[in-house]
Length: 424
Image (cartoon, rainbow, N blue to C red; front, side):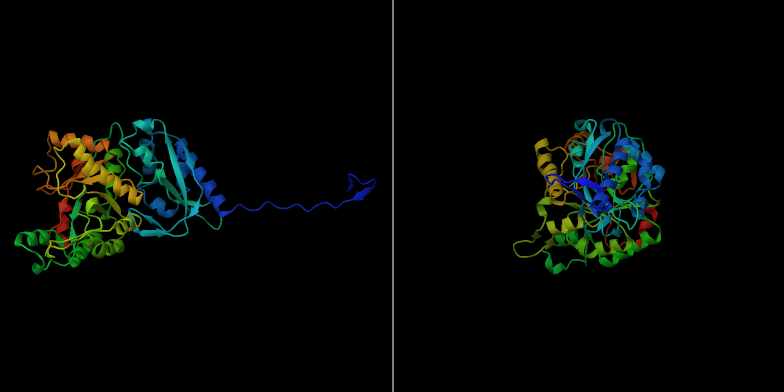
C-alpha cells in the first residue's frame, strides 16, 4: 500500500496494521447485560421468557413456571404495572441465601441494584410499598459459558415485598403458624423473685431438645416451612402453597432462639419469622436485685438473621401495650416507628406485626370496631397483616382475616407428634 505522507515531498511505503479482535466483555458487563434483559422482560410482562434465565435454586422456589407467570401477571397490573426500571452497577456480593430455605446458599453472585417504576406509585398498596421497590437488587451468577443466571429475582422474587391487590381472591387453607417465645433450658427458680414471674417464664419456654424433636417431626412428616410473605402470596394472589405448609414464629425478640433454634432450623432448611420489639433490642433486663433475667437480640444479631434466610417483623415498641383502641398517634409511636426502625437497620421492609398482649376475643376470627380501625391504621403505616395470640388455637388462614391470623401456641413439654393434627 502506498500513501502520501503529509509534509514530506516524497512517497513512503506503509504496512497494513494487523486487525485486532474486540476484547471479550468483562464479567460485570455480562452481568449488567443479563440484568437488563431480565428487567426488560419484566416491563414487557414476559415472565415465561424469564424462566430459562433463572438459576436452578431460583426455579426451585416456585411451584411451577406456569404458577410463577400467573402470580406475577396478577401482581403487577393496574396501578402496580411496571412501566420502567433503572439498574445500578454490578458488584460482587456475599453469599446469596434463599429466604424460604436457609440451607440453600449460592456463592460468587453479583448484586445489581434495581429501581422499579410503577404506573401509579402513589396508589400501590400498602402505603409506602412502591418506595420499597426502589431498594431491591437482582443477584446473578456468572457461568463459564453462556450469560449469567439470575438467582435472586429482586422485584419479581417470590419473597419481594407484598403488594395488596384491589380485589384479592377469597382463599383459605390450613396453615399452622407456630408461636414460640423462649428456646432454652427451663428457668432456675432461684433466679426469679416470685412464683408468678417464674411460672410466666416457664410457660414461655420450650427446651432445645423439645424444639429439636418438634422440628424433626415436622421434617419427617414432610412439612415445608414458609414465611408470612409466602402465605400472603397465596391469600392475596392464589400462588399455590407447598405440601403441608407451616410457619414458624418467635415472639418477644429473645436471644435464646438464635442460639438454640436457628441451628436446628438451618439443618432442616426451615425459615422462620422473628417478631421483635425494637425498644428492647440489645437489652439485658433484670430487677434491681439481679433476678428475672431476660436477654434480647442485638441489632447485629438481627441484621445477621435478616440476611441469612430469616425474617424480622414487628412486635411493637416494648411488647407491653395492646394497640386496639389507642389514638392514631400512639399506634404510630408503638408500631409505625418500631417497624421503621427495624427496616432501617436491616434494609428489608417490615410488613407484618404480632400484636402485643392476648387477643381480646377467644377466637382469632372474632373482632370488633376497635380492631377494624387498627387494621386500617396499620395499612396506612405499610403493614399487610397481623398475627394474634388467641385463647383458641387455630390453623385456619383466610384472605379476609389476614389482619387476624391465628397461631398455635407452643407450650412446654409438647412432644413432636403433638404437631401431627395441625398438618394438613
